[in-house]
Image 1 (cartoon, rainbow, N blue to C red):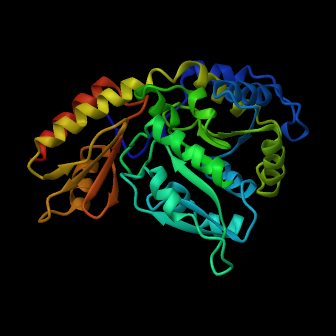
Image 2: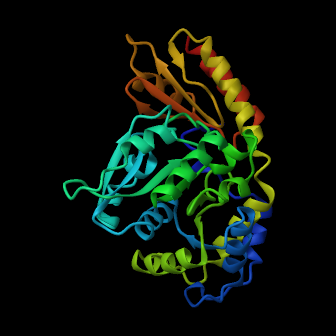
Length: 339
């Protein structure tokens, strides 16, 4: 039995999802007449109480489009130093949008309104104009950390008062929603644009949606075309996204419960120096200084448990819908055996 905990991107579509894909009515999305794409865009926008949405191949594309349409180079974007848009999107902020990145050291990837306000550049030609603020909820490099809604509201108010656009990298936003005391519409009311990934814990094979106003999404479609994101009969993929949104949100709690069990198991392993707080479906632990984290990864791999390095001496495990109870039992046994 192979247990793949490298990421929640490794999920496979279920038979029911495949059936929805197979039966999806199709058209040409670039012409705007693919009914399955249109349904996904309407449904996802409505979930967040936003006006419109555009379907894209990846979360990197939706993030990069959002940054592009929310800015006018030269200028800068404020984000946490752990932000996915900065660390893992190939330098796209500078290449695609022509912006400088103003990095802040938040709390496990979470920024405060006070931090952001202090970082806004003065009206001085020596400095790039601050134009966009981007938050990530949950934050991948923060171990799946979750923003508090009241802090988001403070940041949103600040951005409105200072004329800044506010974007949410919501790659795992539903992981935050099922754990927090707020809903999708609460978030939709705070942001100019939101990127939602469908191919992580929600289990769709491909795709993300970018949400925003009608005006913003009209501009986003133009940038999507420029980026090569027009996919023609994309409804066969979009149908999986709609199925995921209708069926796979609440079950994310199961992934979180399994992640906490793994975290508790690791707390008692002698080779583990510390386990970062387990907020959602991401478990990050540090190996003792005298040990090699790559050697631990190789030992796990030999036991058919796949993981990834996540920094110096760090290893990440990510639970997902294909991580079964039997797989959990096997993983616990192997982690204990490595003592």
